[in-house]
Image 1 (cartoon, rainbow, N blue to C red):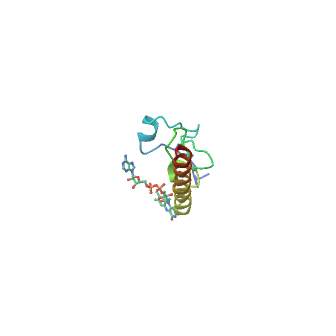
Image 2: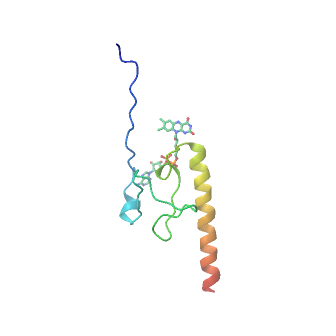
Image 3: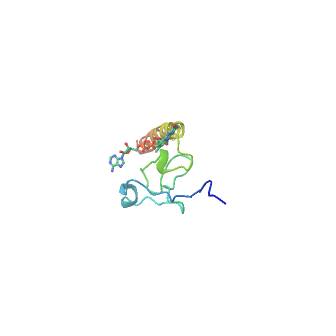
Amino acid sequence: MSLKAIYARVPFVQNSDIPTKLGCELTDDGLLQIDSFQRTSVDGIYACGDSTIWMRSVANAVATGANAGAFLNKDLIKKAFYQN
Ligand SMILES: Cc1cc2nc3c(=O)[nH]c(=O)nc-3n(C[C@H](O)[C@H](O)[C@H](O)COP(=O)(O)OP(=O)(O)OC[C@H]3O[C@@H](n4cnc5c(N)ncnc54)[C@H](O)[C@@H]3O)c2cc1C
């Protein structure tokens, strides 16, 4: 019987070690751990795109990037509001 196809589940590896050097935690799958608001485990660091999701596509990178920017802005406004 001739071989027709091979499927491989290639492990995901982060391209940059900057987030982990800053203390950001990874999921068991190697993605940056984020909450529903794109916040990593380190206060003030947000992540989006391929480093955070299995569904790697331009559409998802743009969508999560837009959310990261919006939630970051919201968190900054909230901090500034309560400090004043
Ligand atoms: C071969 C291929 C084909 C694809 N085809 C499609 C497709 O047809 N349609 C689709 O929707 N998606 C496609 N994708 C997936 C899509 O390209 C990605 O999901 C998308 O580009 C992710 O965007 P991103 O901004 O998260 O990451 P990237 O686009 O990977 O951007 C990360 C950027 O960070 C830079 N960077 C990394 N480390 C550092 C550092 N230390 N300092 C400064 N900069 C750094 C990198 O150089 C890069 O420019 C394809 C991917 C590949 C590999």
